[in-house]
Length: 96
Image (cartoon, rainbow, N blue to C red):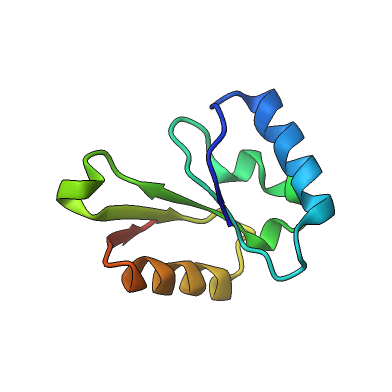
């Protein structure tokens, strides 16, 4: 699942707290961050190991670039799954 809500801490916290109640157990939470770090929200999902950032860079139609950014608690298999997704949709990607 990919989400895009305003870059305001309180809004994102509320969003993830609500989402964790309805998201299936296998959901990988991917934030399209701009100024906030994945580690700031991972705990609100209730599944921090399944949380990372998948940021589509500016001018995506021209550059096809995505940044994949985990945090200390992101499980490697979820980084791999999101990397495979980025490849499947034709993105060049950077892992951080």
